[in-house]
Length: 440
Image (cartoon, rainbow, N blue to C red):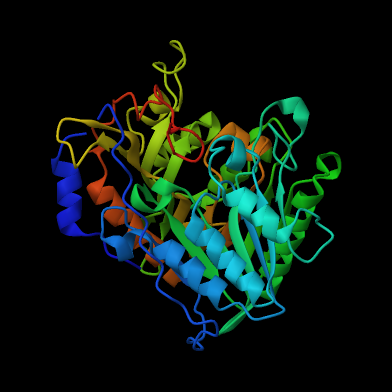
C-alpha cells in the first residue's frame, strides 16, 4: 500500500478550490518493458491503493499494477476486462502488446465509454485490433446504448459499471482476479481515491467472474438472474438484482447480519465497528440502516463524496438528512473542488473518494470476524437494481486491516470533512457515474 503524502495532503487541504479546469497533468511515460518480462515473485493476495495527493508513483499505483500483470500475461492465456470507461492510451497499448505476444484479449465496455468522449480513440483502436465477434478468442464489445448488458429495459437507463480484470496465467500466478473501483480515465489516478483487490491463484472466483463476464457479453438480459458464488473465504455477488424490498437489497442484508454489541472472552462489552468508504450514497435504505446500527451500539464511520438531499430533490429529504440524524454515524465528506494550482479557483472535476468498500470488525452472523466487501457498486438504487456490477467479500484479517488503514488515512485528509453541508456533498451538483465532469 501507498502512504498518503503528508506534504501534498497539507497543500490540498490548505489551499482554496476554478471556473475552468486546468490541464490534466501529462500521463507519465510508461517505462519500457521487455517483450519477455523477467519472472516476478509469486503474486500475493491483497489490495493496492492509489494516492491522488502523492507523486506520480503513488497516483498511478493501481494502473501500474494492472500494466505489470498485462505485460506478464503468458502467450496463449486470456485477459478479460470489464470496465465502465477506458480512455487511456497507456492501457490500450499494454493490451495490444499482450495480443502481439499471443495473449487473447477480451474487453467489455459500457456504450458511454464511446459516446461520453467521442474523440477518444481507445475503443476504435481496440476494435481495429481485436474485432467485435464474441465467438473469437479476442474481441472488444459495447453494451447496448442507454442500457447495461443485463439490465431490464423496463427500468430505464442503466450502465455496465463493472471494473474487474481477469488474468488466466501470468508470470508468478494463475487465475488472477483484480476487482477494482477504478476506471481508465484522466482523473481516476490523479483526482480520485481508488482501490484494487488482487486475488491470485483463486480458481473458484476466477471461474465465477469469467462466467459473469460471458453472461454480460451475451447481453441476454431477459434470462439474467442475480447470483452469488461462495468459495471458501470468498463470496462474489453479481448484479443487477431484481426486487423492490430491503430483503432483496444485498448490502442491507449484509448490514442486517451485524450484531452491534457483544462480550469478549474476558466478559467485557465490545462494539462492532462498521466503516464505509463510498463515492455515492443515495440509497435511502442503506442510510437508514447505518443510522440504526449506530443507535444500536455499533461504531459507524462513513466517508463519502455525494449523497442526495432536500437541496437536490426539490425539498424532499434524502440520505444526507438521514445520515445527519442526531445520534447517527460519524461522517466525513471528501468532495474537494478547490484548485491547488489556482488559489481561490474551483476545479471542474474535484478530488473525491471513489472507493466502494464496506469494512466490518466485530460480530457478524454470530461470530467475531473482520470482513471486507469491495466492488464497483455505489450505494445507489441503480447499482442494485439496474446496473451490471460486482461485489466481493473477503474473510481475511490482513485484507481488512489494510483497507482500514487506507480508510483512516483518507478520512484524515477528507475535505470538507465534517463540515459537509456543501452543495457538492449534498448532491446539488452531482458528478457523472465515472466522476469525470464532461470536458470540451
